Length: 113
Image (spheres, rainbow, N blue to C red):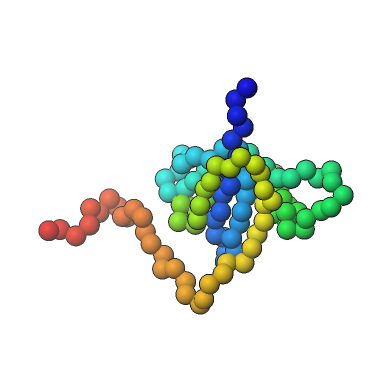
């Protein structure tokens, strides 16, 4: 029987850090995006309900596949065991990262030498 892969994906969205778990992660078909499929959440049958996980489960309800911009992904780990999905506030000062274009527009090769 093949081992089941679980990936922990950390990414930034609107000033918050999202931690989600998925069974499939790839470079995807869109240039500059990471494709995340088959999101995994904890079982709902328990008596104790984690409001943080409920919030992220509701936000991704009905989502089959997500395309995350490459520059927003902080980390992707293959883990043995699923943890709790959560949204937390991005820690840091009042400094914002300057937007960086990864690919030149119009195929411009850059400065001439």
